[in-house]
Length: 279
Image (cartoon, rainbow, N blue to C red; front, top):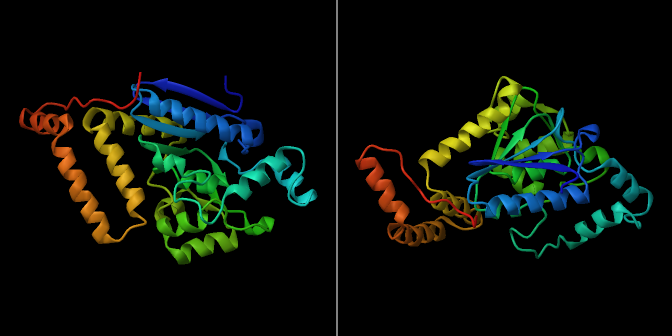
């Protein structure tokens, strides 16, 4: 049913592949909707423990489709075509919006871990999209490029908040102001990548093995709660974060996953945790 992505589930992994290789997987409004739909499907699928998002061909995503940007620039910010839809979406991103109400932070509220498998170039709006994924795994051929300053634009879709949290304000400003190319090894050094796989052909298998290990050893409920803690508490002080952790820990004591985690350790066997989802 999808036109711009591929979606595949092989227990315990859902793989979402941006599938416009002829356009370096450039972002369109339809792709935006299809990715949201696929993430929601993966979250509801009980067989899925983790989600991998990657790109077909030689790029992860080259940013917004240049036809949309051309449309916006030549029509004063909007038209009757796809550029108008993009402009309308920008207009809805108000300063007063909730912390997770923007275009990409829904990935942070998804209860299952999301790995961005960075197989090639990440540019423009794909940059904040990738940073809203929980982990980023790449290869020496991975490439990060902000590009906004070179297009007369600004750090969009929360990138001015997301990027300094990962690399610090000085490095963030360097990358934003210069729009310089950051390849895989430097991206790993800066913290843009959590892991780097030397052989590009092993990127997806590596990510799959990571999620298989989570499925075999970790409580999906615990992972969902910890993911929510990490992102929500980025906006809190230490005291509030510790108080909430104390409350959540008491709740954990009453869950079957706690009893299973203790018993599996005592009995020296792999844990058998219940999964999340409907089907």
